[in-house]
Length: 199
Image 1 (spheres, helix red, strand yellow):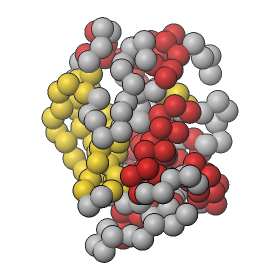
Image 2 (cartoon, helix red, strand yellow):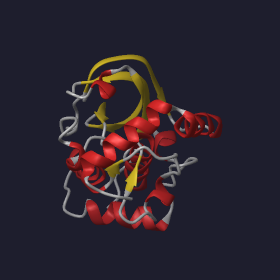
Image 3 (cartoon, helix red, strand yellow):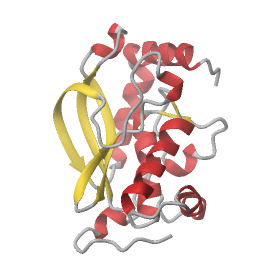
């Protein structure tokens, strides 16, 4: 199923580093997930729920949408969940972009209450940008409420940036932080315990 790209939004439907929207596996998956969707919004919501519920939120280095799909079971950090969602949207001509921010989550876990770096997405449907943060799924409901399409899952946010693509430098810096930061290692342990998955 192909949607018509709104005029002026062509750049938000192009593949980019870590967001391989033209990859045959990603294109076929996007078509399969949205085969019963009649509108752009229904398709975007179907893609959002698939990524939210099928990909476990886990603190791992950013690898991009294509490599994430090679993992069994599927797991990735917020940036890779955004990579996959954006790639799936773009694969069927739904404009999508990255949302980078520092945010505080509503949770009982003090480690998640701190203002920390986060990445989500926005998709352009019905003539407007709609927030889509597929990070918080069924595997982590004990920690954070389930993400909902069109709603912010955080209680506080600052330093919000909207970008078309991730740079190699941004990903390199993020991966370096993930590998050396004690807080990343601590959060990884918490998420593993919550999801019940040993990966």
